[in-house]
Picture 1 (cartoon, one colour):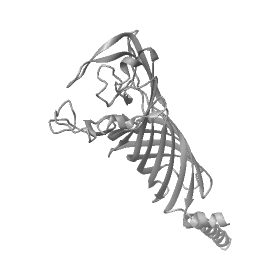
Picture 2 (picture 1 turned 30 degrees about the horizontal axis):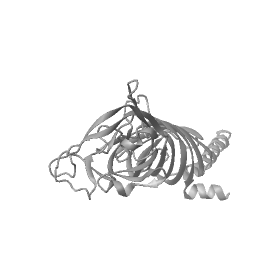
Picture 3 (picture 1 turned 30 degrees about the vertical axis):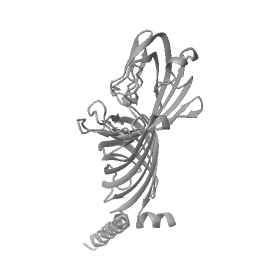
Picture 4 (picture 1 turned 180 degrees about the vertical axis):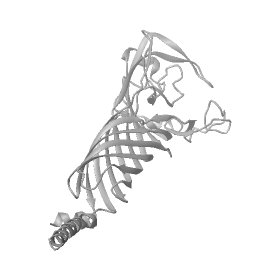
Length: 345
């Protein structure tokens, strides 16, 4: 009995020492901490590229009807019509996010994302026309074997807010673990920039110099389209690595579903052989206001014979595809009392 008592005391002491040794680990377990994340990467249109890219309308048989149409490679000589498909979400993107993890497993983040899309382009060879009958509406006839060459390009710059829910599979002590993020995309700024260059054979300039599209041998046009309120969804699956208690490196596959709605467009440049000719077009043919329907009260010559040339033209609202699938890498700083103390040590 006397021999068993010291053995029992030794076992109790050993158990007490193990318990005390584990206590600091439980105390340092993070219950809540802030995260500051910076990430960047590249995204592609997705599995299917069935959405059309919008571009300025080029049509010699109705040159007075400006607007945006799906971009296409067109040739009146072949003939050819090939739509340009894709997504403005195709390109470089960068995200800055401020988050809060309620515990090591679940948290929230408010991110702001900047997207610069790739440039989409097309070429059009269109037959030249001359005005046959004065309007309204004016009528045009082909000039035979005379053509113009138009090169059209477009790209997008977008800024979005991205509130998200974050779920991590991170047990205490793990340095490598998976995570997921699910949120919504709220564009706060978006603009499409369209560029058009038109070349015309000087032989026919005497016949077409007064027409809206054919003001010289070479024409340079720029048009800017801005968006209105839109909403989409985004998500990501990735792997995180914590080399230090206050530092995390991430690699993820992410995706977004977003279709933006245009608010307005404006021609910012119409230059003919080096001369500015925007004033010759007037407000109606320079500024465009997009609406969801057109009727007799709209400022559009096709629906309202009493339209006002001194005001922007009303036109049906186009949309822009921004859906994508991409790959991002990032770095996050974890801010809490525990991580700050560990960093100081």
